[in-house]
Amino acid sequence: MGTNKRAYNFNAGPSALPLEVLEKAQKELLDFNGTGMSVMELSHRSKDYDAVHNETITRLKKLFSIPENYEVLLLQGGGSLQFSMVPMNFLQEGKKASYILTGSWSEKALKEARLFGEPIIAASSKENKYRNIPALNEIQLNPDDAYIHITSNNTIYGTAWNEFPDTGDIPLIADMSSDILSKTIDVSKFGLIYAGAQKNLGPSGVTVVIIRKDLLEKENTNVPTMLKYSTHAESNSLYNTPPTFGIYMLGEVLKWVEELGGVAAIEKRNKEKAGLIYDVIDNSNGFYTGHATPDSRSLMNITFRISDEELEKQFLVEAKEAGFVGLNGHRSVGGCRASTYNAVPVETCRALADFMVEFQKKYQ
Image (cartoon, rainbow, N blue to C red):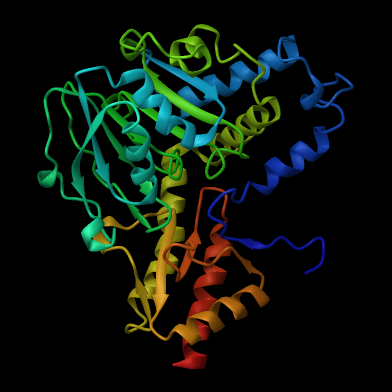
């Protein structure tokens, strides 16, 4: 491919970023806002950076309709550090916490929680090879739980929660790393939401945490300073040097979402994009088979197989030659996966759908 041609990028993360955002960052790389410096060179205590930081938090609050009784934190360590921070702060001695297993990432979150207490598996779809999200009536809620943890979208298996459990007074904590800002949700249903930025929000290196303020008062006390949510809430996420360039890029992606019409417009676009590919799978007479059950399908990660393994390898080879990037399934499950995050254009998804139709005609 020539240097000017953009790849059909279906990478699962880090993933596609909006072209307009990349072009703006390129333009401002050497001189941000007339400072004669890159945003990466600014002091994080300067007025110029402070404006970037605060505007990014304000935009996120507005776009995601975050209520006033929530703090927005910009942290580091990815979603994976949150697997530890959540139980470290909120799994009090003598309490339990419930985890709902829907894939590899929720398993990893559970593993970390076991270092701090006694988590319970409230529901799991592991026996069904994580092809579905457990039905709401299958979830065993324990009224004494410190919290309930879910993974809203499962990148590896291509499943997503299309309806969230009502947990009443028990805080619902969600890892939304792979579908945050992809559809409208009611933030007030959650005690805490966390998300690594590198799929829908920006480049890797920033983790967004949305936390209800009353939870900050219930933190465990014997937690290292940098790992306490209150540390970052009290310092506006400026306790130490934040990932300034990543936050700048996050702000630019949020501007791009605003210009597209906000989260409702993005959701409509995401449904169109995923629909193009799911329609090919569903109308292929079994040539392509989806991993996820239709009621649990993800809009962000479309996982599928071709029954003939050699043909599947051929599909991935020819797709790569045609300019499609990142279609290999996760190494733990194999197969194929198209990640259609917010910044993946409709045209890219249409090109893949057309390629899949032509491939089937060629080899069926």
